[in-house]
Length: 477
Image (tube, rainbow, N blue to C red; front, side, top):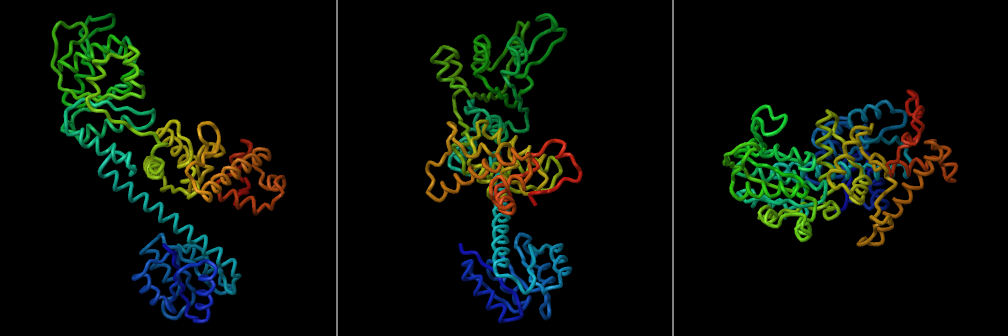
């Protein structure tokens, strides 16, 4: 869709000049109005991406127009034009939410540059708003926020399985949301409201896990000074989630099989069995079928667990979902930490989508949390996410460009080069932008522009004592 701009000025000659300039240079569709009142009517009836308004007009002035626009749509950027010498008024407009101001007479290139930036800003805000809206809608209906075919298949399967009482085996790599899938199954089942008990099998020593699961009677072993219920009994009426089931011993596999077959258990040291009403959901990141073939896992238990199989996909298979997942974590952590909502630049979104996430959603979650905690800006850039110089590489360390057209591949390679090269310069100069620019043989302003574009913060490369100085130079500004 072609981007649009509304030009508001009571001077018709100025309006025609601006319309011709912007159409020719920026290829934008233009609307014009000779008063603020006429501008508001245009805004009611048309989609407008940017407003360029004169401050001084008969009737309603630019400031009043700005205030009304911001009440209706806070994401719509407004650039105020004001006469030379009226800087105080222009500054006041910035406080009221104007994106920027231009003083007359103005340089054409300065005006065009400001409009370009305003449109980029509007596009970013609109994309952020759209992602946040989609996240809210997805969170109402499911635990997962992705919209890709793989994620839709996963959530549809979970919704179908949840209504039954069958045992479910969830498979997937580390960090792909296996526990989240189990919680969703429980939440959508008839057992919701009853206990959901999680057992991380590898985290409990083998000699203790049996008594933890089935309970024991007083005197069953040294230290058993009283009766104790097991986790199966704790989960009575609800769901028991056995995480990383592939790690349990063969003897425990046999006892677990009996519980699943007979729906009864015998606590350690007891002579009688007890009925249990528990739904079992298990998960593993191992190849259980391969383990069965190798004699490492009981085939009868495997088939008893694997009545229905659910697979959680790794992030590399659902790259289109990464922006939504990232924004979900961003919103979550900002809320937890009581911080103003952070947003992501286009470059940051591109970086997160293209990066290799070996730890999948859990690794992405940790990166987002660190960025929220340590970033001093509300707009997060690639430099806020760990080592951005490992940018966009495939597992063998080469830049991944398969499936991209020439322009996208070139953009990706150029981004990787700039981030690596500039980061290397700043490491050598310990964050001194002037020295880095001199070493690169480019103007300081050019280097600053590249740093802003790729979200590189010079403060990250300074010595610790320099970082802690209260009066540090903010060289990247």
